[in-house]
Length: 138
Image (cartoon, rainbow, N blue to C red):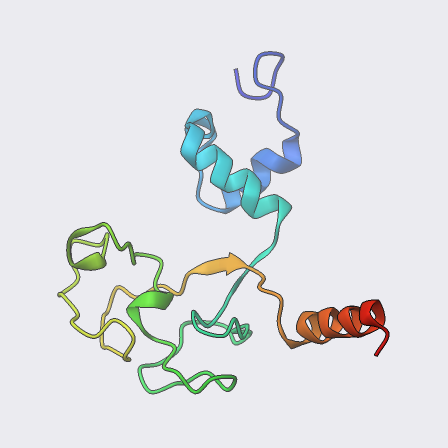
């Protein structure tokens, strides 16, 4: 029972799950359910795999687009939702052609930029350095 006494979920949770592509019946699956809860609690953003720069433009990056923070390519295997270091050719999508250089831009037609938890960007680093200076009396 999904919305009742055995498995109580707020209706807004069920509606947001449905809008994200989860069926109400699949909410009982432990892995997907935990991923869904984490996604709703902590907003996830599209980011550069190298420096954490947030991709705010709608859609997917093109092959020639690079990160303004570190100048690395954005349409790379390391930024893809299907990238998995333990899968064959490090890709969970079996339709994709193998890519040798995972950190270089490629033409994969199945590329979907992954969403990650927000890394501490430059603001957080400066805050940390200020706290250290205050701690040591500089």
